[in-house]
Length: 449
Image (cartoon, rainbow, N blue to C red; front, side, top):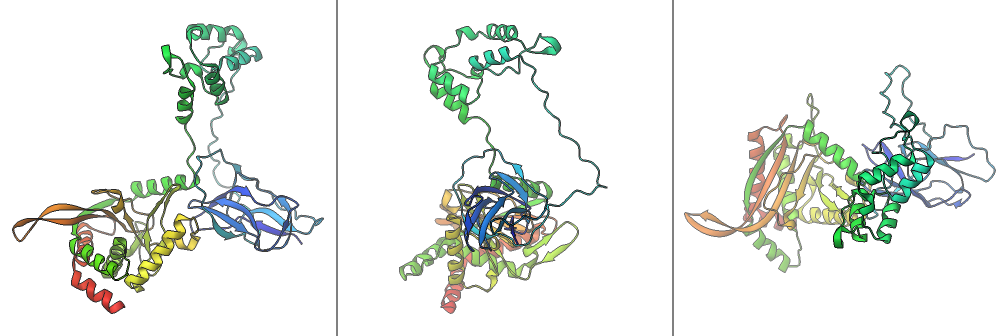
């Protein structure tokens, strides 16, 4: 009996995925564990393995097709086996997107067939999209427009029913001064291939001549579709920022002593990053202020017994947030090892879905980017996010004297529905107090050895 290959569900909030590439073709032999296809989710590209052995009998969703999770996308079985009469979901086609560095993570093809959810017959009918009016143009006029490398849409047609005829195109070219247009043959050929309108190009060559560089610049300026990851990032963060009342609190942390202590540990071969210290200070502060480690929908509040710490990582393809689960039980060394492993997997696109979901609080550290101060948008489902800026030498007053210290600003973005100003200030200052208390760090690190 043929086995269905269903679109896996890589994450809790993933509703659909796009098949980027099939690694097997119809008729190919498939062994258990073989990679069948690559999918693009809202977080990364993943490789999907087969649970079954046999032959790839039928591909239902082609490359570029997007279908809901758990939808059957292919069948694996023995040659000659009849396929079940199941509805075929080919998926909606995706337009070519901006090329992104490939991230590969393994997922497993679901073994249980599923049918894409059907709209209820009782549901109100959705508004139909407006269909663009078909351009009415004669074959001779169209050919002339193509030879001239122009878009005929702006041309007023004088033919029957407003049809654009050849004389209309010629009149349009004359009115636009097409005869005086200067363009190199290569540039014109490139513009035609890119479906540009040469009348809309600005020439920077001698005497205003349109050159290859002008065409290349116009091509580069054309709109390009966002990757699926960036589309989801844009949608979720827009929803968060517009639907969640953000409240911001900034405090300046004196990192001078902690950086000196970090240098001592480094000399001993114990390599900790500044992020490690911040992460542990945040984790312990969240245990003191559990409301900041909560979630709300505006009507109810959920308190999380575990601190699942998200650490934002910027990649060429977008922002991912690997999550250190149950960070409250980890020592500084354990937190360092866990975070370092997640960062390495993130850079190589090897994060698993469970390692990118379930966060209860997020740290966004831009300290390595020479940033004096910034605010971050709260991840949906969390109550706050901490933005960490660069540590810089600044003049400060200590004991009535101006001295130079290593200062770092941290800004807490809070959901004002459950975190009020006083609580946000207490929480931010709890982090500050821990980072500035070197004797506390010495005792904490010493006892953990």
